[in-house]
Image (tube, rainbow over all chains, first blue to last red; front, side, top):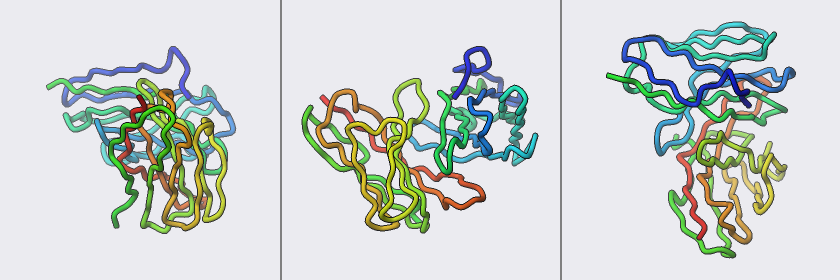
Length: 111
Length: 114
């Protein structure tokens, strides 16, 4: 889940700028985290994941940072494009394969 | 591969009616799950299955039944629909190994209960 104060439900970003989406998770025992992107009318789509033995993982234009000390996760999108407009969810692996999702952040890219 | 498929895409029910939401995957995934998504909220786990013949409850199981007779199919049954079950329902599947358990989601079923 997400804690008030760290999670912003909406984010407006200028095209070409970098986006940072934050998420706080609840279970210090969680060992696996995933970021999903959900476009309007579609199911969530995997973006990137990270295990608890890592602090950082990079993909194509995306980077996930994990701070286990404060139970915080962030997703950085480089050079944000109009196609990045969507709702972004973080999810933590609570137990076996069960994922707990945050409420999501709606990202709007301004032309 | 078709991935995870769900039918129907849209459904309107009257209170008290029953129906089954279908979910199928062709990736030979062991793990399958059902989520509901309500406005302004993340996905909440309804039921899940770690393999054929094995199901268990998630966070919000009341009013729903599931079965897993085959690896491919994981239907969700609403026994007596209530307006509180108006939601978008997503089915997901994953390999369910000790490695990455990335879940692949279907396109969703939008259910309205009047």
